[in-house]
Image (cartoon, rainbow, N blue to C red; front, side, top):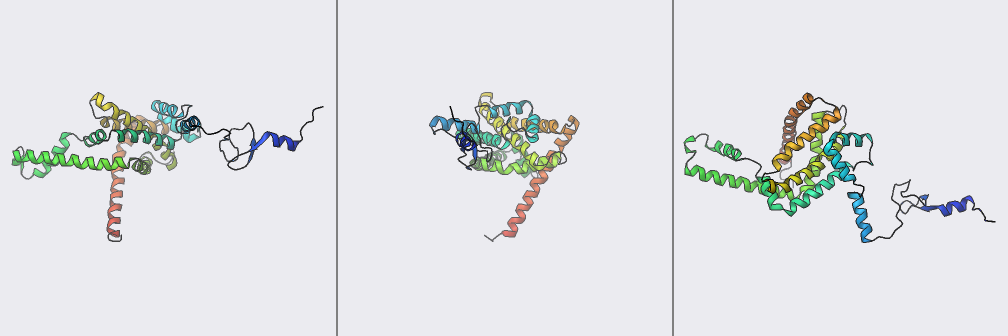
Length: 292
């Protein structure tokens, strides 16, 4: 006759301990119900490390691609469902942003000269003409003379060189700058679209998704620019602005009229925020000048 195990014996046979928190878990469990850690019972190999990396950061289940393409079709739906608690279906906004940043940094640093040239050529010829002509406003008779043309050429080249230098610094610290500006963009969206239906944390989720999406579209437009023979950066800003409006329109269920009214508030509030930051910076510089 086969002896039946006692309760204590049954537990000893069917349960194992979590390697992280030492809590007893079922042998068939894949995660610890106490600390949430994944139960690992295999040796590490290069193949397994690669699979784990892809699973954690991109996902063989295509969570990143599912999130991206769903966001492409209906950005408000992704944000709304994630805020409502749907967490398994989509990649988290911070991971989504991190992947977008990683891709853009790799591509831009692989083609740094092309990136700096494109970023420094966003202003049309008329921009340099207008700013330079301000110098000759009191002496209009000099406009069109050889001396004027020479000085204008030198002025334009100097401005482009300065922008390239500034953009090189931005590229060097691209990931840090992107993460630091997210709270500011979120604050602007918080002021533009309000806080009655969405709090700051929810606005932060939305802006992480939007910025992560923007990084990929900007990288795509950058790579296609030589083929299309246009500066793709010209199109990324209005393209992203459209997605901002569509995302918040879907989330807040706004009419197109109210959505465009919000659009008018964007530049006013953005300029106001930048002015406040500049004033704080100037005051801080004056107060602490010579302290360090």
